[in-house]
Length: 507
Length: 122
Ligand SMILES: Cc1cc2nc3c(=O)[nH]c(=O)nc-3n(C[C@H](O)[C@H](O)[C@H](O)COP(=O)(O)OP(=O)(O)OC[C@H]3O[C@@H](n4cnc5c(N)ncnc54)[C@H](O)[C@@H]3O)c2cc1C
Ligand code: SF4
Image (cartoon, rainbow over all chains, first blue to last red; front, side, top):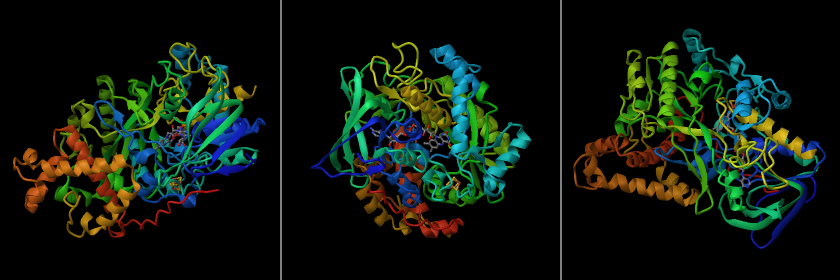
């Protein structure tokens, strides 16, 4: 493969064979951070990415277009468990960083203590491992232009949250994001056509190419190749992003190592398909399931004006495992969350401009599992236990309280069986809502585990340097290696870990 | 889908928002699984008036008011899988309806530019 080259979909009939020092599978938060670190260290890198390469002028504007062009499987991956909750991930060069809100949160110190205590990873929040990751995060913040959203881009929904926070004492803050100069177009979930959001397709992937690397896009890795215990490359097929036609076969050979960074759902699938059948592969899948509560205000809120996510609170993270945030979703998605159908639904929709949506994300204790379906896709087995459901419900209560502190007239919870909307004197209805997960509409967008790191090879897949136990030249460098959920937005932690793993590999 | 989101006051219904063209495009572009899911959900809507209203007729043969009551009852049924099936219908009906320029202007939102659907080929 020539330096700085991109090979997109290739039709059947030919076979593409490329070679470099390292092959990195996946170009999202983990894959791109690993690839650029390897390239900066002087290695040649080939990135293998299942999705197409879309530039900001290629991004969709509507929700329909975003599902079609950006999402893995049209966003149709759902949990198999008591409730069917969507598992949201992107399939595009840049991975989920293209469609996320670019919220940047440093790894909390207590996470390093837990990693040391529970998994034998690192040396705690005061140790060198934490120091190194935080240094990577310093670097990331500079390179990806992390900044607080300016007041001019906040929009009314975020302003109301700040107002509610001041009254309710939630110790919240304006969110820091990898999006300097954000103009608050509220389109983060469809991809930032304004080029403010620093998704990895705009920076680390092009830099990897400039430094002599290459990328295969529309190229799903299907198997890791081994010579004995040593990983020597990956093989797979191109898939057309529009027709889904299967194209040419490809082989990407790695002289020094293979990095797996295909996400918490796809990395375990790739390992399993490659013959790594250890029970730890796919185990310990975790998430931050979350849901929204709508506040109905007398004034128009127009939540689609202003930054997608501008305010957050971690006040209830340690006690309740909760992170609270504002989140504006496109109108099409918000409407499908309103209960009812027919004339009743249309009456409710009339209030759309007066709705603000705020959410919670729960640091759930429940662990799930990723298996491989007969079609070769991830099957996510996951369902919250009663204790988690209690905290999940509590999160909704706290969001509702915040709305009322901000002056909302009513809140709409979407909990099945409850009245459509509730007044401030009806909060006990939420507090006593059923604990059956099927009563709630939730999503999983922060995913962890499946190829977790740990000292004990009998319960983990790789060590703290990402090296897969029992193999050589095979590394994990994405959300799948995180041994537990962290209670804050994970991209910063994933990228820092990937940089750490890549640096270790270069030694 | 038209029963889910009928015209109401100044708001157009999904039937006024090029739903046929939307469904043709969706069928051509989406995965087989999503399309089959939508067809199954529509079938469930058709055959369940007996569950929601106690009327042993397909939904298509009901009068307008009964159909409205049927769809409302389906969205809040205790049967989870049925509720989820209607949720799927509603999600796609909302997409068709909510991206329509007349609806967006009603809510003071700029019309969506065309989704280019393009990607780098070299
Ligand atoms: C809607 C949404 C909003 C979010 N907002 C935030 C936020 O504001 N801040 C934050 O910190 N986190 C946020 N997150 C989470 C964050 O984006 C993810 O945790 C992070 O991107 C995960 O990184 P990753 O490298 O593990 O996976 P990804 O970024 O998903 O990248 C994996 C890549 O691998 C590719 N791939 C998969 N299988 C294969 C294969 N077989 N062969 C080749 N390539 C493959 C995929 O196409 C994808 O491009 C959000 C997530 C979502 C869904
Ligand atoms: S709110 Fe708009 S301008 Fe700001 S980062 Fe998101 S998409 Fe870009």
